[in-house]
Image (cartoon, rainbow, N blue to C red):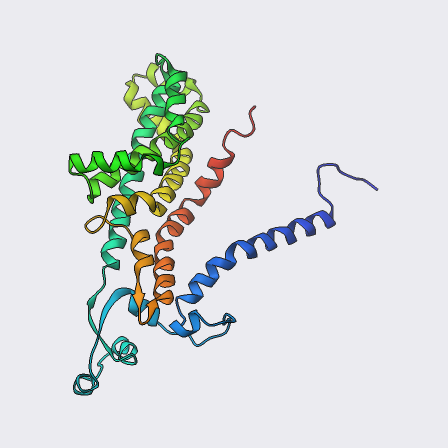
Length: 311
């Protein structure tokens, strides 16, 4: 009977499969619970013991996207609800007064998150290429300095940044938050992308230069296509940070540029925290990053393993 030391046995495959499934269930359970809470009524959301089976309702999503005001029974009788979402709020003796601020906060997250991601990857690619291909004076010291900016928690410099933004007029602005998140993400982008560009043989560029390409043309037509995997992977990590960042968003924004993370926990319903609306907001907030990651998942997997085996 032949035996291979590299091929796992049937029992090992079953054990690995069980561990993967168990890990997936444990990881996805909180996410599934949040999504399910978005379709619960307020009473079901805070029920104890927690309700696994419940009657779904869109009350959380209605409360998320609208502001409501309480009215008298006479007013409600004279103005009966005309739509399904008006009927939902009418059960609590309320009417819809207008849209909520969630849409604006969500749009702010999109502008700031994707804007800072683009800027971080753009500047990080140029810096990484320079460090990888040119003789930069004190290169090792500069790379360590760039990396050292990630060694302290961002909140440690929150007060100086707050004072600086107030003097420069960048508080509560999209530009200020984009620049801040770019500065925080730039060190990550430079180090990740330098590793990818180091793996691209210099001979490709030298051949392009011999064929008459300029340095920029060689960079654009030879290096960038080869580094596309690393750029996509870096973009995902930068977007995740900018999308989920909370501390700076609380301190430096309050209205015009406030993102969704500080806004979602402040949603108040009848009698206190509106947990279905909070869960609905968290579910919708998760979707853009999830879609972005799924679209680039092949690049992400290749990017994580890129350079792991050298010839």
